[in-house]
Length: 348
Ligand code: NAD
Ligand code: TYD
Image (cartoon, rainbow, N blue to C red; front, side, top):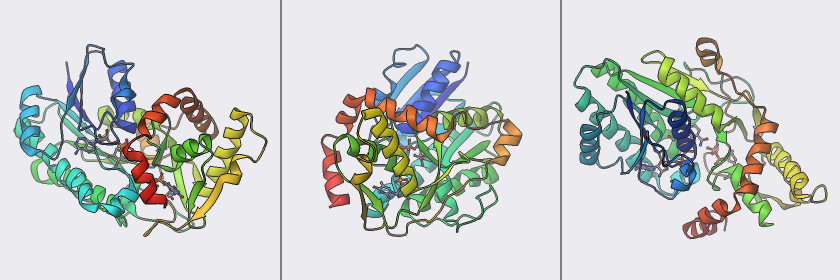
């Protein structure tokens, strides 16, 4: 029996990873370690929370002593590390929060794993979940490969890049078996409505404007979250020690085109006259340091591990909208309270 600690399991991607592992590996003990910040929500895991191979621990990865105690108590064989501050706009207002969780928190976990594994790494693995944003920005052409030099521009991506370097350093210095995944923008159920897609779904439902930064020509590569969870499962089990794998959707959209597609699908599903939601599009002040384009070359994970996205963007977006329409209460719960204050400050 394997014990695996998944950090950040109450968040958007983490909850899909936890569900994937709990359902697929009944013999594993899956421990979801999460501080439940504004982005963490145990509602995301209601359907699996009573299963015998699942356990939740509320803990902050910035607390080094607590991490040592938890690792000593539970003796995990594997760590899949997703806990992070994850929103670029918040990193611009509060960079230090990102250093604390993303850098210090990651080093605390590496130290706790090193402490209990005591140089006997048989059957052990530390999987660090990172982002394509560490590579910086592309012009109109080219793709990020695993060999692209790091060139982060936002406090978020700088903190993730730093954590990636620490994870690799623990392999090189202490021979810890590590793997990394660097994934493109995710979307899907349970996405927190501070990010572009769920924010626009929420605003369309509330007939509020759809804020597009700058000229809307910024480009992202979008991947359905369940396909990311499957990629993490594959890399955790079959990836090569010390390797990183880029994960992407082969699916680039300019923000303005993506929002128009979203408006079209929302109008169809809500039986609105054609063009209703598009009228809400509003161009607003650009994000400082805004990266022009991200695009992932996912050839390595495709060829070595036979991974590819399972849904087209149009299908994934349709499933995502359906989920939000069926879970309006979830959306209302997460957008009450502090969310309103954040929104006022960010979009005033
Ligand atoms: P999220 O913000 O939805 O969730 C983050 C989770 O981490 C939350 O449950 C939160 O409570 C928890 N957390 C935050 N600080 C913590 C702390 N100090 N101690 C313990 N738990 C803490 O994030 P997400 O979008 O699900 O991203 C998960 C991971 O995937 C992150 O590492 C992110 O960098 C990476 N990633 C995200 C995307 C994306 O498009 N969202 C793409 C590529 C990689
Ligand atoms: P976001 O979902 O915040 O993800 P990331 O910054 O990690 O890529 O943003 C996706 C793109 O959408 C990015 O180019 C910024 C842009 N954007 C807007 O135009 N308006 C918004 O209100 C938000 C949140 C993002």
